[in-house]
Image 1 (cartoon, rainbow, N blue to C red):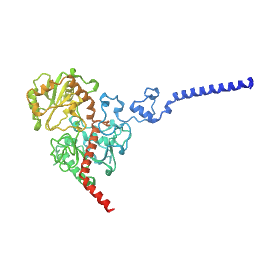
Image 2: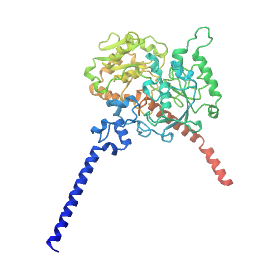
Image 3: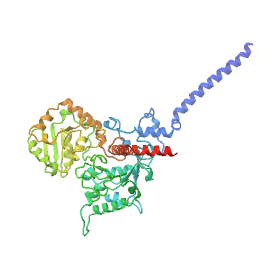
Length: 493
């Protein structure tokens, strides 16, 4: 081949090579400058909500798609506190609270009665439109607020109801633990949305010329409603869930509805045939003090008070021990034992006192339990439980001895016993319990929307375990009868 013919070939090869190089460079530039069009919308949603992605520091993230929903839970916009990620969720599968889920994924499928507002949000003075049974809960900022003060401590029914109402809303991000279903035949449990504690707190007094209180009339109506439902008749109410967290709530109806599963604060005012640990579950009070941030929680040396108690001192029933302890401890150094109430900024004062104390007393009152335990947990103050009959929330999955001190009532009232015990707990032992408190505190937080492992989620998990336990007992009871029926059917076939 001649030298003349080689030149065009070399020139053409170089031209093609240069063109390909320029094409690759231009493509890379186009990809970098237009990355917004190459990242799927689902990835943007992940970046925005979770703030976890290799792209999260990229400047293009500042120009999010205009139709990306940002009306989900307020908490997704906040930096998570340390304790929220400190422990794995207890029970069930780890589920992403930020994705929508179907009833088939849920631990508990729940059918909720569409009761009129007079049984629930109407008790909070909420008024919907004509024929509207429920408030719009898609935006947490406009959800009706539960009355404040001490009413809040028994607000369990409110949080569970909100959680179910939002369970079918794809833009409200929550765990997939409990899901509302439209057909009762496909449900694991039937939820009765009666705000019984609020009904007692606000409407148990007889008004004007009425013969009965509104609270009593609502209970009569509720019993009549439930007794007329086929869902109740099928199993005699055993598949129903009723929240009666205030010890005096449901006083007029509890005997007739005692076959249902109750959510209670304790069993102090219930006969064992009406409420017991086999069929019912204990839920935490909603604490009334603010939760102490984990990174600002005071250390052992920064808590000058050894023992703290503030509240009602003269109580009846098991609460007489408070009076005995008051006279034993009131004059001791580094002990705060005083009468207290919510008036005169009482809640804030209690919060400050607990957060600056090493140990907080939780003493039986008129009933075995009190909100004080959960205020102590929120304050990262190691609880000292002096209540022989107390039952504790989620104790089948939580070991309270890791973050609480238990003292028998008969020992507590011995002169010198309690202070000797607590002063003997050194820095290392206390710090270990304090660290565990910070890890488990989120299990006692009520919030909307709910989070994985918070109080609402933990209650639904407890309901699931209770259902499984009941079903196990039924299966064990019927194992021989079912086996015999199977054998007979096989022989006759």
